[in-house]
Amino acid sequence: MPKRAIERIDELEEVLDRVPVGILALCRGYEPYQVPVNYVYMRGRIYIHCGLKGRKLELLRQNPQVHFVAFEADPVTVSEDPCRFTQHYRSVMVSGTARLISTDEAKREALSALVAKYAAGEAVKPLPAGAEAGVSIIEVSPVSITGKENYPWGARPVWDS
Image 1: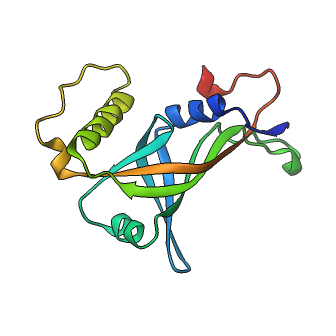
Image 2: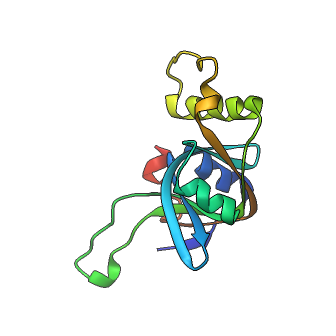
């Protein structure tokens, strides 16, 4: 199966826009910590909502360097020859610096973008007044974004259907 680096930023951003769950990796000393998160990619940055307390926030305050992974994959293709098993996928890896958003206006904008992403065009009520006070918003500013994909040339991945 052809594997290739995804080098065009619009293709990398397309994956980040579409994938519903990413993995945020943080670290304290030599102890890695990874957690699945809902997120939105907006204006070249990743926004993640979380509670007002917790391990993510503790680790972020100690070390703002993070890694983020988003991927989409078809089921494994099985073959009679075990060396011919394959998986069609696209993945994006982001290394960057994270910070907590502090202004209510920026938090509200990120929350609105998250709602729009996950509502997927469905009608939903507006955010209630003060909703931003009950959450923290993490902003990840990428230092590097890389990606890789594996699917037959000319074939449309399941996720593009």
